[in-house]
Image 1 (cartoon, rainbow, N blue to C red):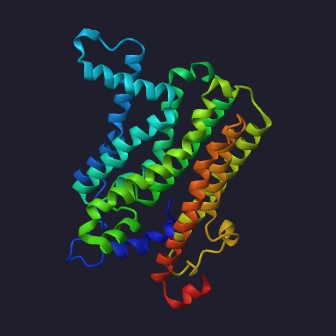
Image 2: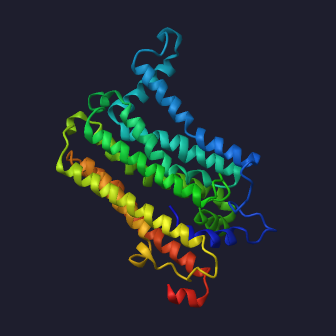
Image 3: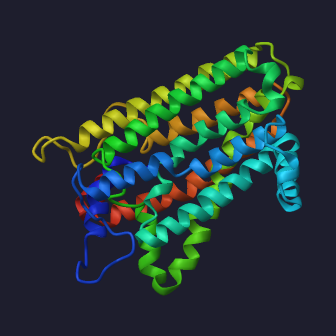
Length: 338
């Protein structure tokens, strides 16, 4: 999630050069406008194709797919292929769903709307949908009532509610007014090539950052991994709550700072958690994802740490970009104080 402190400078950047229409630039609209309502409906239904496909696959697995004689050979082959992926390679199946529905589907929507805003809210919504996918697999039947799974899912839902609330509060409870400023910046830089470059920069790149983060859910839903509560699960729970708490407090402090009057607002936020770190909200997010991955480590799956590792590496780069962009919009005195 991006800092609310970027909001004002982003809006200035995206609203510049109004004579020349810029891809993804800030486009204000009212809460009750057709565009806002339409984008809200789009947000709620964007992943419906994947949900319906998974439901169809599960029906086929249960033998409720209808009369086999009425299905074509190609249809049966597709069903068998997808069912095999779902049963034996669920992580790969999740990549297929993400690739088709989000990487490609959201990219197509972005081309039509000339804005790739839709991926932003799904940073907090997708992990919960992925957890639902893993938990409803046939292979997860034996562990659905296990304490580790119940706690992990509850923590994931709590994290999703917190970050979704923070995102829409920052956006003024509107849908699709603006996209991530980095996409707009790249659109200005690459212009006529952005339509195809965006597929890789927005869709595919997000896939390999987001999907690995939820790999631990697969491990937790495996009966072979063990359903007993361990001390590592306790550490994972404590760390996850700590991470969520730090990010929540940091975001609230930042929101409060951004909404102060100009007379009361100091040039740089250096109070509370922001006196200890330039990005305490990022610190909280990192603690959360590394702690969440420990649920898989408790079941001897160390490869599930790859998601948290990728996320940390990306955040190092993103933090540098964010600071560079933010400082470029500030006066010299404020930059020196920062």
